Image (cartoon, rainbow over all chains, first blue to last red; front, side):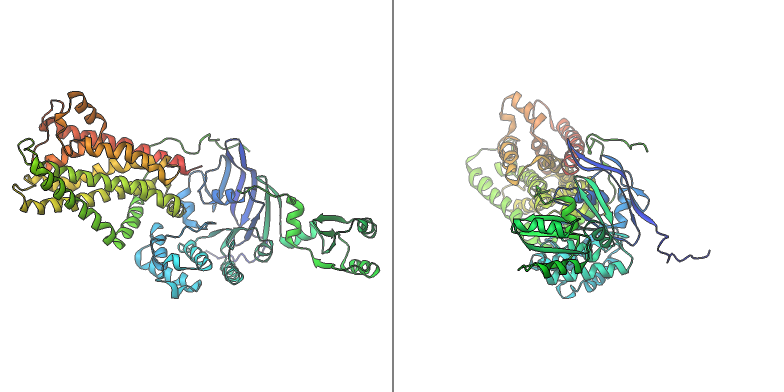
Length: 317
Length: 283
């Protein structure tokens, strides 16, 4: 048989497919008939305010929650009847730390590998490999409680990869981490992307999503409201640049004149001007009007997110 | 496109489907146990010694013989049964609750190819094992103490069957305990089953005084509702060769009756507890 190399970016294999996926809790609809496809080797970020339904979606991906209706398949296996098989191909790094505090770092991995039916020798070998990959070798005999939050996070990653999953689910992987630990996690994600692991992550940090994800799915009220590459979404919804200045009632009409298509948003003491006008138009405007405390910055994913989901605070999920 | 079947409640009542995965859960708990064996071992060793000393020897001096045997010989099998009960019941209430609620061990387990039913079944088997371990420790204490009492405390070779009996009795109590764990809103909730069920049972199951001395109706109630009565019947039968005569029933009838009662309750509560836990954990 002849091997065909799928180097062509157009030939993409659908690894995960959701069809009218719905999750209801009594009268509350957490996930409302969503459809999406995720391709092999992709890194996809699910973004959404608290309670939007993104964690529920992730939890359905590893059979933690059964869907109320619709279907969800991973590598052709349906969550309705192939949970055991699905869990062999999906690795999970949950939001909350559920490491086994009764065991040391190494033992945590070895015991977890046993749950997958990995033999003792192989489990030890893979555990050591993972500890090396995540720079935890020196901590191998330490107690879980003696680890920092960043180390625990990395250990959770290591644990999720023991059975060489095709899909890795990262539920808020860097929440509560210091910048150093965050960067270590990001590095690990980048390396895993190179190894062609399909990654699905949820996050509240837009910079993280923008840096790591090939594609972003924005979720609100249980529905997918946008889906696309980070750069394209920014271009589509915001434009190139954003002008930020101190709030001034009188200035608003000026701005509206200068930028006819502008969307002006005020939040507290600041105003933001979103326009498709290029950078030098802003500069020209600033040349004419001497204003203090003004910045022109690149539009980012956070702007997109806030535009699409609004600025109101949400209840916790 | 047609909608795939819509389920009202995600967890339907069913006979649990379990595989050899349950032993992986069991192994996890066994690993923790062996790691902390010193802390686990000593209390279950000391308690029966104190009971034998205080009640058997101390109090026993003022008590005439019961059913033709010294008081200490009467309570020794009960001590075996009580420690079995405590081992299994505490493991699947406090122990399981801590693992489920505080340590999130169950959440970590169900992300692997182990199902929630297997997790709970593994916990139940481990609870049964804790009961068996406790039972064996106390059995050894009782056996050795017998060298220093007027009559040996173990007079029947049937005692060799006790670990097997203990495992199934332990499984029954673990399953009952797990039902409480499935509905416990917080860890303090376990005060209710312990003070309303376990403690009364500790005294009213033919343990420290003959159940036969109570009215006929009370004996009937004990036989139908108190699991410990049946466990005591079996431990007493295994250690001394005879049980009390309860509700007009002799040893020859009581022993198979108790085995049957335990077997039935084990099956019922095993299935019910796993379903209750599913109801709690699958949302």
